Length: 352
Ligand code: ADP
Ligand code: DP6
Ligand code: CO
Image (cartoon, rainbow, N blue to C red):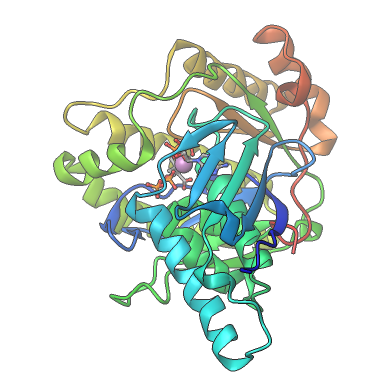
């Protein structure tokens, strides 16, 4: 009788919010970016994806993925690339040790849940694909490092490669055509700058009108400003940001964060037809942050927006009242994790 045993493993993964943004692919198939990026991984005590990966000969013939209880299409090239790469690694383990069960040949059943809005510009694809890749790697008992897994997660969603690490993380764009050097690396662990906090302002939990994948494709095809951003602006921001993180220089960290978010949204506006991710509430959050900084006489808060209207505000713990307190009262009542000062994820991005 065939072995009907169910093998399974679970994991959680955090979101990361970029302070120098990834926007644009030089190779859409391998998901290779046109510029490097840096992000901060947020504590998974607040926002997280929980994913279970299972495999069994009793699962029929097809791989399946259930996200927040809805069946997802897994036939897309990105999900397929993740499955293929992870199966190839498992298969070589099986080839070198015949006592291992042949899991690489069994259909996968993935069940995932995000405890925050999906596809709303809060990096669900980052936490989602980091968790998917790590859950399958755990199921297959792969000895891969976070950087190895980041190379695979990148093919699911670019930003996902950065969620394999906690703390401050860079995605190096790399220069090789096969993408083998387009991976995430740690810039500094969370413990290096333990006073950093983030506040999330959920302006809208709705699915964004233009997905990141298609938005950046239209930008690359139509925006003339985009080339300047990728070639001139981002390399400068990368250098300043990595230095600011190493020196715990909040004012520079904040200034570059805000300027890079503005540069990214300018490029969206320069896309044809234009992409509007920010709305009136987003813009009023920018004004409130400006007022807070003016009142403090120095930069104590930094706003940044991904591909959606929701704001993430970075600040240091000592300024929590000045920043989170003022934003909450200015923008109406916020509850749950939206109004909390969220810490930086301190260990590896996902559970090993
Ligand atoms: P976001 O701003 O939330 O990252 P994207 O447009 O980049 O939005 O990506 C959203 C897509 O990412 C979803 O439609 C889904 O295909 C995928 N995704 C989100 N969460 C998960 C998850 N937990 N597991 C697998 N895929 C996910
Ligand atoms: C604005 O990683 O979601 O959040 O690679 O097509 O899945 P795909 O795109 P995705 O893009 C993220 C864009 C961003 C900036 C960032 O996270 O760096
Ligand atoms: Co995304």
